[in-house]
Length: 100
Image 1 (tube, rainbow, N blue to C red):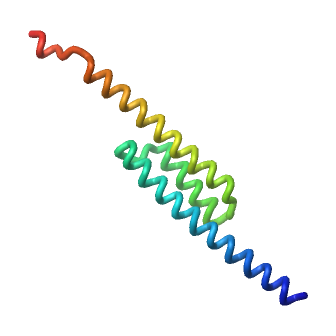
Image 2: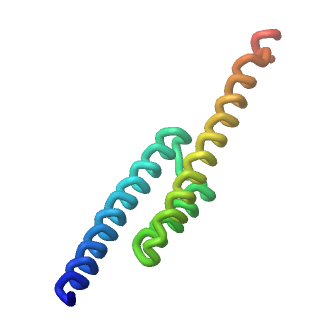
Image 3: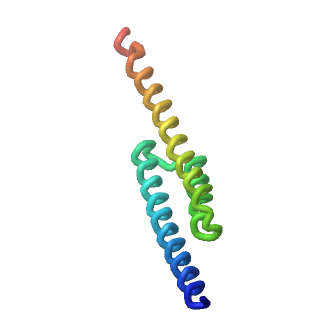
């Protein structure tokens, strides 16, 4: 019985380590995506990713970490959409120097 319990504990630890590794890879991928999307790392997105990394490494709260990563990506997508709308608005506005 003790051997079975030890085996289960070991397997659970390996599974947690694997999940942690996958989660950290996902966080790194999200950070690259955010940088590509926005050209920078906006502070709210950066904060969410750091918190997700902390949860993944120390608290092993995978669900909460995934929620933070999702929030960071959604925030970055919103910021990129706003920046794109502003750029389109700026591009479609009449250029004052051409009128004079």
